[in-house]
Length: 578
Image (cartoon, rainbow, N blue to C red):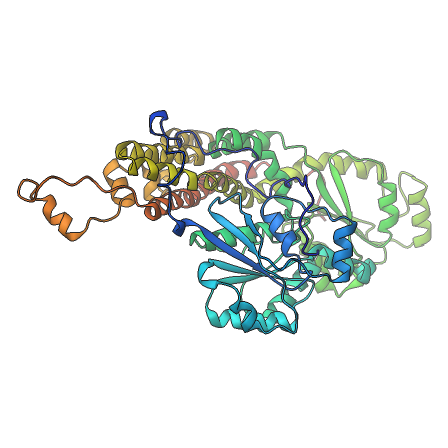
């Protein structure tokens, strides 16, 4: 979209930002008698303030991306659309935008560069020394000017990555171009391959600023925040597109009681699956007729038409099917070669997918006759299709399919819930650092350390890493508490002492002061203990939040793996897989 400012009154999209209205966890506020001065003159230094540059050509979606990062959905009106299609230039100044998830971070929107601009001169006008990272936005394709700019960036050694916006627009264009042979999963895969080939290395993401919950946006945010906080995480794994609705089911209890609520809530969902629709992929010949016949509302099901087998070679067709997130595949066998049909069904079953084959061997009738009988709503046609029975089978199997999806997607669900909690806690880290350092500089060192200790204790409780939470998780999952504690490796998750915390947060004493500390009577009066170092204190809190997040993910994965193993055995399918 055009690089225009968002209209007033934009609302943040769900699941792209930490929970609305969250505050720093309990125990992170300073005592009433040690509140920091109103002028804030003794807060953290400017070295904790970080700037991120957003650069790109005109119309590449810089403003839209910034608003998505800030939690606002940009609604494009006629004015912004006219500006986009006319190619009007944006403002020449550099607007600065706060980044709510990390209050000490500023997003700097630099003016667009033109194809005729010199990359060296353009980047020379950007004060790169004051930037932590640069984000290059490109539109539907990577131009030669983009590649030249990337070459200069790589030579400079400054951290950067590429964001290809307009992914939703590109998919829409491809859908119109490919027609009935359109596969969404394959198209996304080809887009990523083309982008990687064009860039020849580096980190790149496919996003849509107007739909930030989709595509690579969450991975991009994790990568950006990892660069900001110097805490790198792998971005190779794509989020499971089928688990988004299931993650939303867990959000309310985990937001209220912390991640320790996940195992008991999961236990209840395994007994009674959540009301999430099972996705049924319908493919094969005459699928339009069957879809019309099944068009009446079916409880707990979402029908998704897929291209037929004649649109691609058999091997490619199987790969395309597996790229589509479906719980069960409904395969219409009319016109399929028996050998190809058998190979397709066997391959799907071998890949762990459920499938139903409609119209098997021995069909000799006319396809038009079959279509007429389906449209007429008869109970069965010459190939043995019982539409009422098919509806009943699909409805009965829907809860089981959702249950299986829940078990299959548990690692991704846990990862996303831990990420959500980590981002919620990080929102309060900068203010917590400010309060603790201000208290220490005002002579309230013990109270400042007590504030840090109580905050770390609150982090442990939110992540489910305190002793009570671990015992509860062990009781619910059946995994021994000792095995869960073995997954906790962060030193800050094990309850450091006041002395250890002071050593980590305070600046080291100069050698002369260390020597004189051993001879207080001969060397004069004892010197006061040093205050908290803002950089060390902020780093300590970052390591606490991110380190405990990794521990929490391992603890939940181990506990829920035990819980999952005890529930997978009795699962049975309500229909036979051919």
